[in-house]
Amino acid sequence: MERHLATCRRCRAELAELAPLPGLLGRLDAAEVRSQALTPGPDLLARTLAAVRAAQAAEHRRLRRWRVGAAAAAAAALVATAAAVVPAVLPDVTTPAVPFTVAAAGARRRGRAAWSPAAGARPCASS
Ligand SMILES: [Zn+2]
Image 1 (spheres, rainbow, N blue to C red):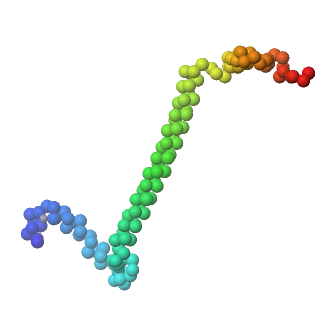
Image 2: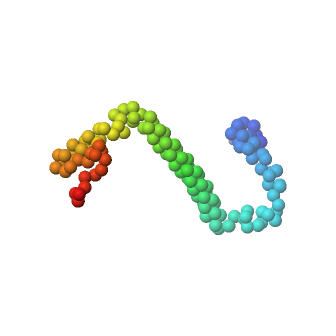
Image 3: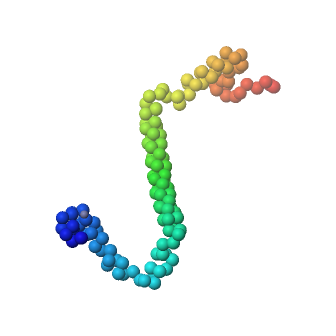
């Protein structure tokens, strides 16, 4: 084995990675090792898979939160851009003269009395 290690760089690297392991294993308490936490049972695979799935779910939730946040930021940026661009592109619809004239003309065309703001009141049928 030592002769092989002298010629094989990959195995030397692998061995170097394992070098701290005996020290770590030496620190383990034998009673602790025999306790349920470290004893591989028939459900070891199930427990390991459950832990992996839990970690994946946590990561998924983290990414989801990030995506929702990014979408909200994008929407806010879109609204801000629209607020800045739309008034510059569209005619000023807040000017009251244009919509009122259109509404009055439409009312006249339909044969109804057009409400005149100058008269100050709605037309009253009873008086
Ligand atoms: Zn080797």
